[in-house]
Length: 299
Picture 1 (tube, rainbow, N blue to C red):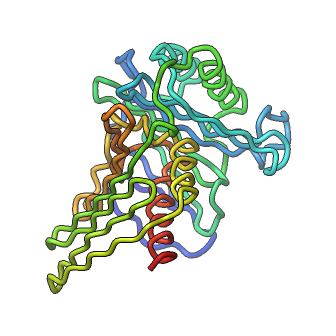
Picture 2: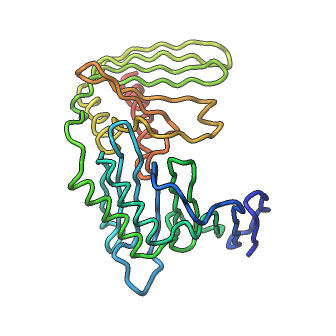
Picture 3: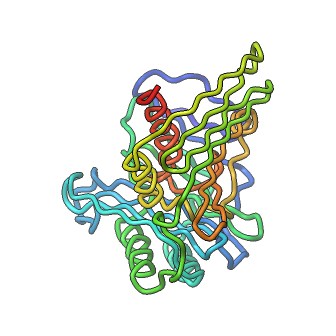
């Protein structure tokens, strides 16, 4: 095993080799009492005793324009017995999450990252907690659970309870979506615009490398647009407004946004690169791929 400080770049490892890094300045005590985003994943499949309540958990909560976007994934028994839910709840969930983070001393492991090359995904996990003060907790291990089974169950059960008892009422749903706008712009001047009102789909595309423009219009079936609405529901895409974005160069060079227009004339926009829950982030990519499939279907 090789151990590095976070500001040093580890050399490549052979399959099975391990690397541990430490962020030297990561605080082990947090002064802020206001969480703005929590994203935790941990597998307990390798734990034999004591038997954890869940074999795998993912817990997420983040402040958004409508309250708190919160969700969970958990496995009871084998993988096919997976349960998940995502929705908008009251901000009160953060007070309970702070108590869990404090009780199980997440900050004590802040800055530590352990990685073994060649392991499959969802074998270990990570803990990421962002505070209003700018303080943060982050640690990860792709080999072993990153928290106790009791801590994982507490996170999931907290969010389960909030979704059941403190869900925000009166929010729009996918049934209110009347049209969809996709916009992708690259730093070379290229763009790809799509407008779809449920039956008429219009696309306008410019290739940055040669300046050529492609415009196409098709008429689609209503059921094609219904699938967009199902994707909106399953990933709660109407309620991502207010999420922070990753500071990654790729997202700056290729800016992608999805805008859903509602019956009342309002709009809800999702930006690729928002720090949404891992278990729903593919919703943006899947929506993009699906619209491309529809365009090819009627080409």
